[in-house]
Picture 1 (tube, rainbow, N blue to C red):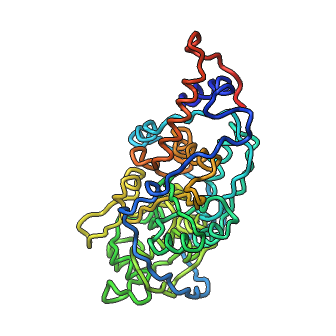
Picture 2 (cartoon, one colour):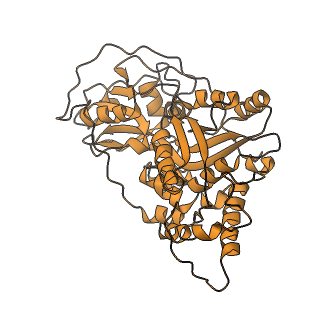
Length: 407
């Protein structure tokens, strides 16, 4: 926000700073203590087996609205939530350093790739000599690439389990740091004209799981969820993406752990956005997708994790607080060196993401912020060091620096 404009004006003063010399392309390595970065007390979700892949049946004729499911539908305009804005204001300002040169490779979550690209573009406006290589391919593959040393950050849309962290440490011989930069959610999506507004975990299990372990009978028709619905006699058409994606894993861990998807009226779409497109087009559709991809002709259902006692809608605030039961963290995962350090350029990109400026970018991409009160210790220290460098560099006779053009 406006604070970063002031920060950029201080770049010239930094050229003489002793903390980060301007003559070197990359500042000296910053010590990143391994222990505080991965707190042992943080609870990790239990590991669950990935659902067995099922074969989708032949295409069904489903009554459609006037919207073509293959048509790219403009996303809903970004709406500034005052509560979320107050949280973003609590993040530290990003104070630029004199210069950066180098490259950052990020591999992983397809959900996170567009947001990371937006962050990279904003970072490049300050440091055009930093090259980014951002690829999707899934969180699981990203962790393997991280251990192999073919990427700097693995972008992961979930918490790593204790077993996963232990395996990374064993294979890489180094400690691991998880940096939460935002919060997202897996959502149950229906057509905007569908009168249904909420659903329980047990109902989701009956609708999606072929073995429906939480219900006596499977649920096929809309009348089994809402007898008064105008589409009560129609069967529910299910739309999902790759079962190995983080979005689908979040859903299956919640609603159908260790169970296979049904094969009745079941369609696997190539992308999360195409799931939402199908829900926009078909009145009988129910899909599982990311909160980020929501559109005007679709809506999300409130979900109950306590057998219908309470229902929680996937609002940005409920996702931020974790109250919504299918909330999930969006993280950058890195392997530290033998001394427990992260390369300075990677530290500074993470600092940028966890600043007011970076969180603005993340909000504009449709995600909820991280928690400004729970920043990793090394990020807090990096923000403090950058701010101290500015104060140290300011001439005492000129408390207000002259604005200059940012690099």
